[in-house]
Length: 394
Image 1 (cartoon, helix red, strand yellow):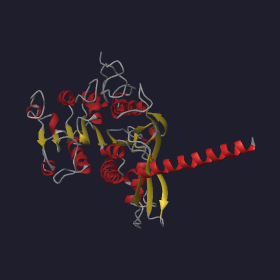
Image 2: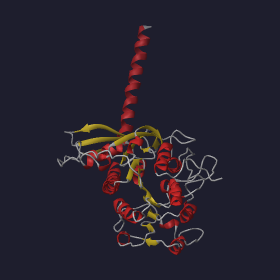
Image 3: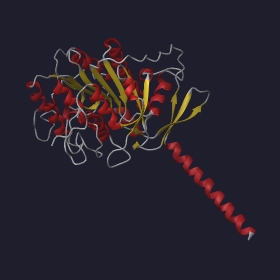
Image 4: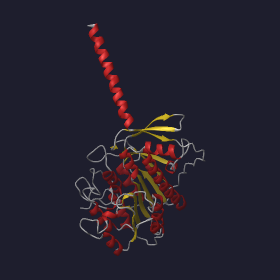
C-alpha cells in the first residue's frame, strides 16, 4: 500500500511540474519587456483642489481600454518611477464599476452609453436602452440648452465611444447610419478618422454625407494643416479612412483637442467636449506594449491640453476615466537592474477589472469613491444643469 501511494505521489508531482512548464511557456508568449525611463527631470506637482463655483464647461476624457496598469506602464516608460504623467496630477481619484446590462464584461458601446445617457444597456448598443429605445445624451441635452459640443477621437469618429454621445442605433457596427445621426445631433465639432463612412464613393448607399455637412455649414478638414488653419465654428475633421493611422499629415490627439477647445470656447454659454484616446484599447487587444505606450503618450498630451485650458479658465471641470480595461495587463516583475519592466497580458479582450476615475476643477470632489459607470453621466448632467438622467425618447 505504501508503495502504491509513493508511486501516486511521484506521478502527481511529475504531472504538476509538466503542467507548470506548459503554463510558463504560455506565459512567455504573452510577456513583453519595456524600458524604464531613468529621467531625473522635475516631478510635476499634484494640481490643487478648486473651490466650488459655477461649472460652465465639462471636458470628459476617455482612455479606451485604460486601467491602472496601462497608466503605470506609461509612467514608468515615459517619465520614470518617480515621475507623473499629466493625468496623474489630477487631485481627485475614484474607481468605476463597468458591467453592462447583459454582461459582466462591458464593451465600448454600452460603456460609453452609460456615460452619455446614465443608464445600463447591452453590449453593442449605441445611445439606446436594453429595449432599443433611444436615450437623450449629455451632448444632445447640452445642445438643447445652448451649449456648444464636440467629439474628438483617434478611431473613426463613428466608432462606439464617440457614437454613443451623438447617435442612436441598435448596433455599433451600423457606422453609416451613425454618421447620418451625427448630422442631426447639432454638435459643432467632430474630429477623428472615418472618411469611409461619409464619402459618397465609399458608402454602399452612395450618400454624399460630406457634401451634406458642408451644406450645413461645416468646414471639412482632411489633414493637420487644414486643422490648424481652420477658421469655421463648425468642423468635420476626417483624417484617415477609418481609424487614425499615425501617418505624416495626421494631427495628434492633443492638436485635435486644442482646436476643439478653441472653437467651443467661443460660446459664452459654455460647452461639453468628449475626447477619446481610442487606440490604447487596440494595443491591449493586440497585446502590444510598444503600441500601447505610444498611445498613452498621445492621450496624456491631450490631457495636458485639457488641464492647461481648465487651469486658465477656472470654470471648467475635467473628468478622466475609461470604458473598461483591455488585455488584463499586469506589471509582472522588474528586469535586470530596474531599467526594464516585464509586462504580462492575460487576454486579448476586455476584462471586468474596475477602472480609474480622476477629476480636476469645480465639482471634482463629486467623483471620489467607488462609482457605477452610469453615475458619471448622471453627475455631469446634474453639474451642467442639463436635467436628470436617464431620459428616454419614446
